[in-house]
Image (cartoon, rainbow, N blue to C red; front, side, top):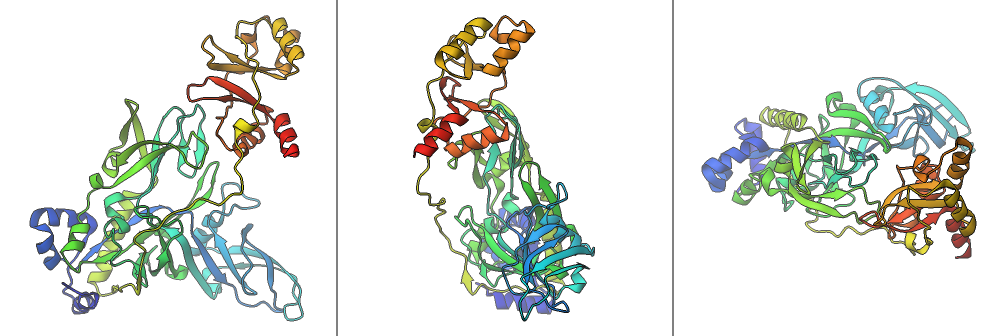
Length: 491
């Protein structure tokens, strides 16, 4: 048995033994956890990936005359001004109001890189803060405090993503290709801090960490903390951080985000911790979920290990699917090595938590009064064959007082859709069959999708109806913007 203070004394004396998480796997496999616990004092861990629940609190100092922020922007990215007079919180996913592919993450990266940013604010105009507006430029040197405060970082592990639908999806897990075209995943597996101390014996409030090149601290479990999908809430001084460990990015169709580097030293107090830090990617399991189903409880495609994910390919439905990471193994190793050197040089000491991160927690979905689903709003669909004549299709539209006719094959599987506008256009062009004018790339919904999903698709694709299908693309009905409006008013 060792204590954190005994290990810190070794750091002061210059005889501490520090290894990276990658090195520790080999050490334990060769000499066993008991001997490794005697020989090794500290194991450094690391992760570098997109961590969107990130931001910074700034104090800009008082202007003359003083102002109390009502709203404030940095490079046209709005920060939250509901704090003290000239304090503000900037979140990395907040998009710019004027620049494309730019947001809070880019502002933070530019500040850490030594650049100036434009500050613009409007005030309330009070007796003690009479100023109503200000425009200036600031750098990190000009700002009194710049504290990175991140509600959720360093996921223990993360669910991988794929897409069963026939559309390209733009998500926070990157671009997902249709028909299980690819899989993306996040996290560094066996190098990641929380996987090397799964019982969180050394992780908690007050644990000193490496945060983007600076000394930082764990200030509690992060939001959505639900082991084995644990998370950490962390803080650190933005002024001391290094640009190489802070990289802004933009996920098309989602938002700006930021890649951060976090390293945590695990003190090897006993054989159990030595054993824990010997964990391998093959032992770390997660699930691949299907983003093609737009519901909260997205279906699990299969369980998979981080070893499989890191191999670059996984099998889904008997097919080999390529896999790509949203985290950098290379930079994570760099973080582990830099933290190792800092400890060996006596420039980084360990701290025991005053309160450990919770070992179990239930992650609850948002409480909602009522979730209305597509099934409640859909009506019977009048379906037709693609070989049907244009005149016959027109007669069906008039007779049934509808504007949309899903096109199906002999088994009722969706093949396309025609609208009253398509039929009118067909007449002017002299088309004879439905197959000549139908839309083949059809936007659809499932009956148990929340109606909010249907409304979102109608608006996004500027259409007025959605065929409702089952998992085999059999047409079950149709939902239209007109029906949704009418039934919503009645309810």
